[in-house]
Image (tube, rainbow, N blue to C red):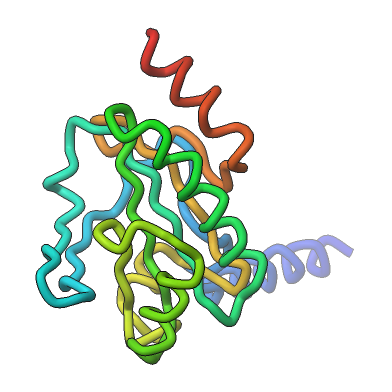
Length: 169
């Protein structure tokens, strides 16, 4: 009986060692430093984005794709709220559509600020998708001025209150 217990412990340890810990959970947690990244300018005349350049500001990272209806709707709602507080919050909207034309048309139809919208044409195979450990359904992250995640999966109706409270303190 004693050998059976030790065998079970050894087997459990062996199985755990083969688990890909980076993909065990989706995304990053509140309190984590947001991984830095750079994105190319999505449209002619706009500027590329380096997340490091936004240090000192509250930033909402919204990851979405036109083919993922819930993330697209969430992005539109967050974009509308963020547009009402440009002096308190910078929104960075990142699409994982694989076609620039689909991205451009979606941004236009959804009436999202094109200067804060970016596209990763590698889609779900992009390094950024992997770096943020995203999955279908995507995520959004609210970062404080030091680049630390202070909330994730923020709803549009929560955003104004959340930023208002943070800006007052």
